[in-house]
Image 1: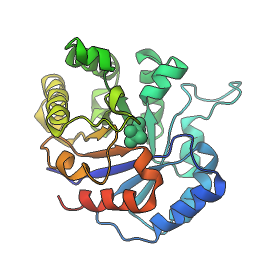
Image 2: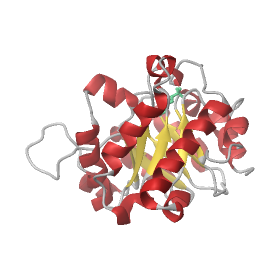
Image 3: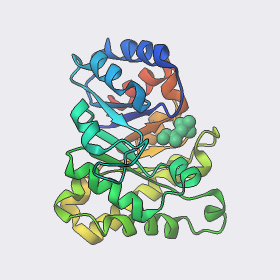
Image 4: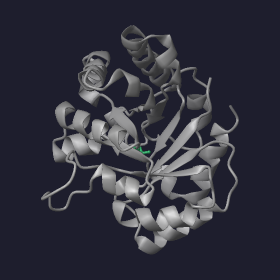
Length: 251
Ligand code: 13P
């Protein structure tokens, strides 16, 4: 079992002053493990500056353009992110899939943009509630994973972090049980073993997201194939977030 990784996804929350304040509070702590903070792109530079003296804190974008550079109004490229010092990027969050129509083809391009620019992609997958009701959750996640990983250079695969976020658990307070989460994580790990072998599979981190909080983090992180958490709502509350990070340090 490797070190647990806790990732804060602030989504489209906090104003500039709140984001600075929360970053300052987080950066004053010493951590045993790396942790990742994903603010709005607008605040990346400020958060990077505030956290620059804390070597354990990495900064992530929540999205990236599929294009290299040029006339793409409103877009932010991987190269731009890298030039600021951003080292991680969330790709294919279910909110991007749902509200912005992002599908496997574009997500693959975005992951490859990250890899080309030395940014670690945090690739999100997860089924909708009705997929689970129909007992199709494994099929859905398998399809999300394989259609994308198939088009990524094998030598880069181990740099990808997979985040399993069942859509029905995001922002709903309905967490997957540790059993349900472990079952899917081990399924994902086995898919990776089948394709790339056990050495690569063991180096790939698979984190869980979906109403992860200070009360359920311990039971989730205890599971063999859960390498950490992608935390939304609870990452906006300083005490709660630090408690989740401290739980991650117990393993
Ligand atoms: P919540 O923790 O608010 O359910 O959000 C999870 C998530 O989407 C993290 O990316």
